Length: 200
Image (cartoon, rainbow, N blue to C red; front, side, top):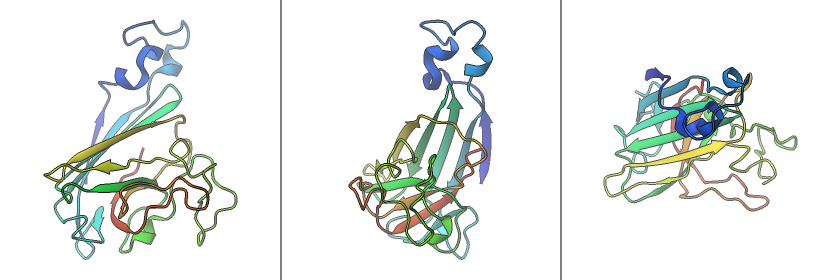
């Protein structure tokens, strides 16, 4: 895995809050409003027996050699996450989420979805399916659809920044969209690939 730290091009994330065009930042708040570091991490999917950071568990849905690029930008009380993929299965949807643990030899090794506010009713055997907690404002969802070459991207901005807990991986699921209804919220079927990508 290659990790690149970038500190430029953040006006799109925080806008006028840091005085990047438009209204200037509030006096005395410039330092507090400026974003933290932007990180970019790249992984290339490989079969489980040879993978290091990017694992495929279904080589038809997530072919070896497919590339995943994750960018994380924090600032002004919000976090923007962008996922760009190349050479996945063409013309296909993938539900994608941030998970709590690093990838391993099985999809379950990545643990449950990362939640900013943790569902108190969830357990290791019964992950959160309550839409009050399993939703795209409290979790990080990056559902995407690839084009005819297997390329695509997704971006989300959530209304929080990370404290001492950060996601450890991104998981691609077999379903094209994440369920939102009560009792199924956050569900997206089996795990076809995983990318260990610490968010900080």
